[in-house]
Length: 308
Image (cartoon, rainbow, N blue to C red; front, top):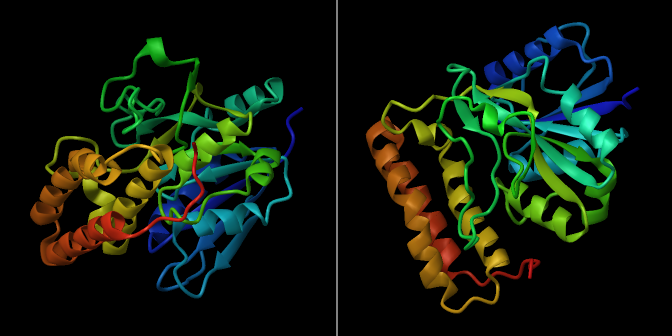
């Protein structure tokens, strides 16, 4: 018998996406779901039309708090043993919940699990199976990324050093490490995974479970930068968060800023191209916010918790 769990959904200006997610949960009707907490810091706060079989608590934040703060607000409103974080641009299926809950119950040292992620619009194409850090710890290896589904990687537990998109987390583990680090305003899942590991918890991808990411599949120029194109403020924090995470990981490394600037070119340059080509009237604002985040990250003196 599975214990109850709570779903936390942070959302900003994507009512149609979060509504689609809620309808997909409604169609599954997980019997062990206690409630769904939607933490909504959208510019215009409107009610969410959802199925009557869902217990949805819609928290409307008067001003933007960004993803990490929204997640912390959400899980602290849950009283269940497990908390399932799901980004609003996802669709669940019959394999989204039960495999993760089963693994958590059988393996008490696991602190967090993520499902395998597939593209909703190309369901045989992998968004990612797992995201372990590379040997040099300057990037995450995206296992299976943009490749056809591969049985070799499915039905397994694969170590992961980030919890992107969706994750089932043990509440006890969250409480022990103090939740998400709000210094990383948007992308804090990798930092949480590493702190969980340092506290003695394991973090894995469970590829018996799946969720569908409702984003552009590869093919069109700039497909990888859809989120940023729609939200210039997010662009600023995504760049800044990457530098903050890298400084936490490489806190004792000489010439950190120079090395980080070089390593960041892997995403700064292609994202800049995508913003220019697909940003339309926002292109200059997008490029300006990316530049602002890059400059801020390089010049400011961080005083964050270290992972050394």
